[in-house]
Image (cartoon, rainbow, N blue to C red; front, side, top):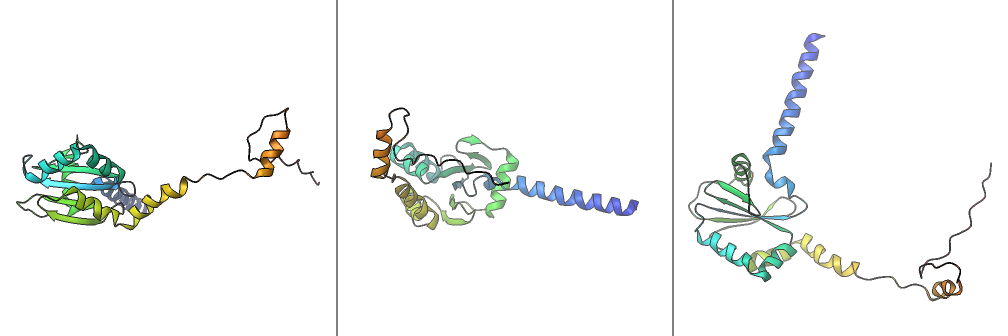
Length: 189
């Protein structure tokens, strides 16, 4: 009995520990299904890729396009990571690098991850933001996002007889387009 209890406790600890470790090891998990991470990895803050992206995102049109596409900017410069300008700890930064399976390289990299968590673009060196935006616009989920606001803008129009019915009532003000409440049903015992 004691051996069985110890074996179950050990198994439980191993499973829960692995689940918690896996949960904390994936910094992109918080963005999955909600935003599109754009990760820039460079060895220096004066790298042309980093400088060009910072300059591009300072322009209001590019910043609006970036936000409209639900993007989040991760930068890893000399193993120091940031998410949207806020510093990440070293463990989270290393977990991000491990998650992306990036080998050592001298040139800066730009990686776009989709809302599904899969890599969509991996590019070495500078890349124009318009290329990234165009690639996102080609994605099926982005096409759904772009078409969703157009269908939700339409508002139903009230039926003409419902409006006439509410205008005849003067004792109680009600909203146009709503039918009067039905009388309560009788209870059968």
